[in-house]
Length: 139
Image (cartoon, rainbow, N blue to C red):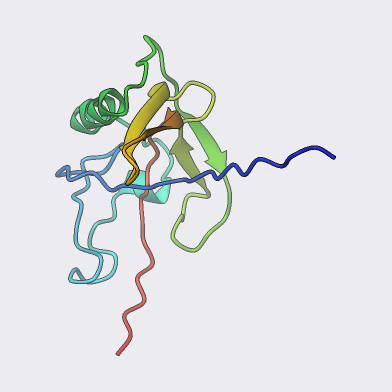
């Protein structure tokens, strides 16, 4: 009988502290404090004729994350539309990376309590927009 090896994959999301959203000049607001629909613009709604403009600072932050994770930064990365329907995505698609992400083939070394080091592989780091957020405040 063969041995089984446990492999655990994680998908970690982080919100960058930039002044505007990933593809528009629309400001980033605190989703708990700000009134609903105060950070919406024609691009977020998918209005005809609107075109995305990439947030340069967000890309620079993303590359810094890739370098901190010991990733390769490919000379070309690509964004595409990921189509799905969700209440906080009024235009019906999300601009995201998959085929050509911002950073690839990295690693993190973790020091273990027994003095050994465990290398954790990082397959990819990619960027995507999060144009809206549903926040449910309870209590």
